[in-house]
Length: 395
Image (cartoon, rainbow, N blue to C red):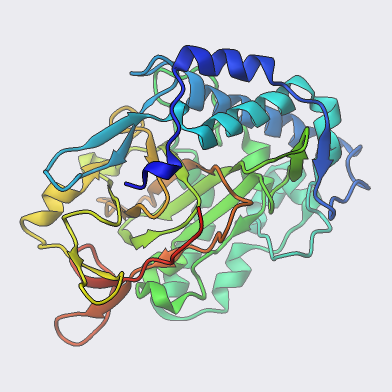
């Protein structure tokens, strides 16, 4: 663990710090389109965005095993067969996210100047899952984004098949979500349907061959509500850079999100339980973990998990009312294994997701490279052999 990234302040101090630091001087990103802000559809999207942010604040601050906020899993195996946990509201990056979300909620009229429905957004391609959502939900129809169905229909093989399943079964998958019992604010698709239908979705790994798993590449998408590429794009508040990048992710069942890591810290709250009792699982360990084979010649390391012995010890179940909240420090290696569906109903892992330092250093996600595979085919699975080459980021 790199001790430079952790700065602890007691929970009671945090709550006082947050409540006394609500700011009002918002500086927006330069590419905000204000021409649609007063339309009825944009107003609906803005109100559901505010509810979403209230829910994220509750996730990060509601007492759940800590003096303030949740007790988060930071490593599923710390090298000694133990799960590592920590009270992450004591981390300075998390505190800043809470403070900045507080500022938005306390000053919604001022913050709205930085809100963009992204109807005319051209920085990157954003999608609605399918045409049916445009008919069912007013805002999605008004935005009239291109669809993931159209996007994946141009692909081939397992990637196309998985992508079309995700796109066409999108609403069935996201509405299987529910909040953990200890939280009161419902920010699932069931409570905020216009937001989940209309927010811009990105097929992030569709063209990333380095992921070496076509079903995963087609079966993963994420959306950003607040952040440098989201609906609410605030550059700074009272001169302080806003690193909050907040949204949601979907990973189709029977897929493996390969081992990866990045500079910005990250958190997840799962909203779905696996079908038929089969557990969705996740893994997290710091890059200097004893679980890995470290090179004496460079900073690289090898991940080589034995399917029968290591995987049960490395991965833990992921569900809303079990191991519900995770926080990954910088360079934490993590992976997600979505359980296969046991019937004909499409399912997957749906999560609330966030990064806390989205304007610091390099944001690129680094995927560990599959280097060996029995039978000669390189396919990213939990028990494949990987080489990871950590980037020497500045802290």
